[in-house]
Image 1 (cartoon, rainbow, N blue to C red):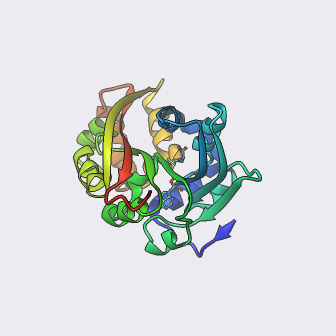
Image 2: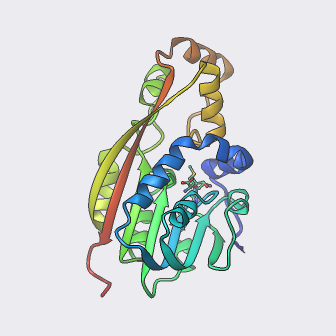
Length: 247
Ligand SMILES: C[S@@+](CC[C@H](N)C(=O)[O-])C[C@H]1O[C@@H](n2cnc3c(N)ncnc32)[C@H](O)[C@@H]1O
């Protein structure tokens, strides 16, 4: 595995801490990855780059759908997550941060490349930097990104703003670098108890960028939260880079 010195963001630390438990708690992310793969137009690709590949959901669904490829590059800033990503002859793992411009210099840009990213780019610190760099990598890209309406009601009761971007902001940035089409999907995840709900938030890593609430604040929040489910909103984008650098 290419191991770049990790300057770890809060999201990376959170995913690394719960890497082993991640697969038990990633029901929504799993559904999202499956939907993303269902959108692919072809059955055969050259190189696929998966940004924020994690434990390999995207890879798994590619195989499940019999989508062929020659080379698969799994990029993630958490080495713990990459450790549990499947390893085959065709796979390469790169431990790197998509918030760092250096990361993109290490990636291939020639040949037929498909760029995929599922449930990861909401952690981009500078979406302009990230999407501009991504748009130079491939002739085709499919993204699935959680939006600020994820945990909307929870954030409302906690009195905090979502740490991630709105649908409109994401579309605005993606639209600067890609000719893209979009779909927004909503998900609800039901729980037997509010305690299970909060445990899920912790273990799934989806709280990676949240303002940390104190014990007392969480207790109050648990008593006023009106639903037995959590809300998720995901923006799916399918794009070709603007400027036609590719033939
Ligand atoms: C919710 S998981 C999704 C994993 C996988 N794509 C899936 O669909 O199950 C988000 C992944 O993004 C990675 N990640 C978060 N911030 C990152 C960054 N700045 N650079 C690279 N990877 C990052 C995390 O380590 C984690 O593995």
